[in-house]
Image (cartoon, rainbow, N blue to C red):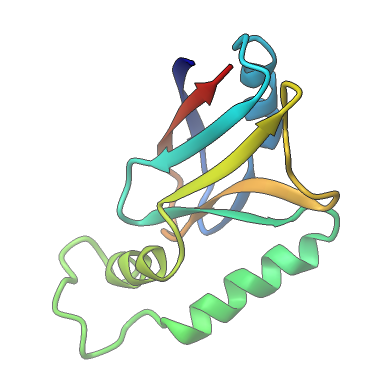
Length: 139
């Protein structure tokens, strides 16, 4: 067994989904591991990771809009408000989604479905530089 790791920096421009599948695939192609398991982990509490449809951007917009309705800003019940009205909702949205995803690697490629992509899901209104760690183990 071999293992390797990398860090991906994703520059968000505010709320929404940011596809970084090609960055992961590019790193994977030079990693020297043909079959194994890739784990991606976001190092933030107001952003998350999702594997989602990559063909129709309406899916991404609808998902973001749904979470905005489910977890609205300016809720009087929020106590954590010192970082702005979008911060506590961002933490809740991140808790409802995922901070890590695992993807099989087969033949040196991500074993994603035809219409699947890997996305950073930014839950804050303003842009941030988000760090995602990648850990690959296999042969």
